[in-house]
Image (cartoon, rainbow, N blue to C red):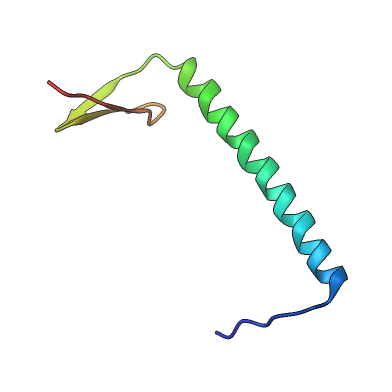
Length: 64
């Protein structure tokens, strides 16, 4: 699987636009996860050192 490199300014600009679009989608998904986790009635499954909500997968580190 070889990588091809280019100096084509139009291709580079297109890739930069795609990167910015993907970064916006990532931020939107992170906000959606925070919203879901903040409105969840957590049901935790305890593990050694942490617990994880079975509904929204929120993880909390616990030290006893």
